[in-house]
Image: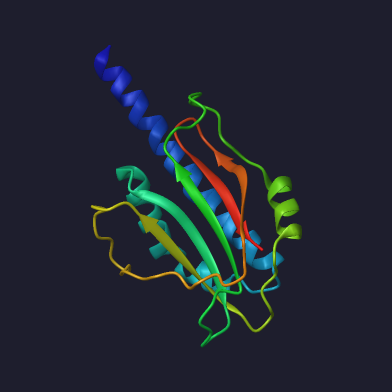
Length: 168
């Protein structure tokens, strides 16, 4: 019985990681597209980004997935979205959802980057995270006059959630 429980926990947690990772991609793509930019760069880089997300979700080191919009050469972010990760889900193994309507409402409220902006995806981890090929240390751009607005949960599983904070 002990082995079956361990297998069931590992199996459902693995599904939670895949579900959260896939829906983070969809969420990032939606934020980029709804802000009038092409998600092509995200799609091209997704294999590396996904490797980092899945690795650090499985070790419990991933704390935040951030999309930072900026004008090339600028010293401040034009807009920012953060998806903080919590490792306490609903506790119900088959509870998996993404609230697209809520996300769209938030996008409508948020500061839109200008059309000459670019973006980057930053994965924030706890100290001691294992190295993942394709990633290096970085710092976030200052947000200047932008203010953070925490807006609750946008993706949930039985094991972990992704909240949402947008800057306006």
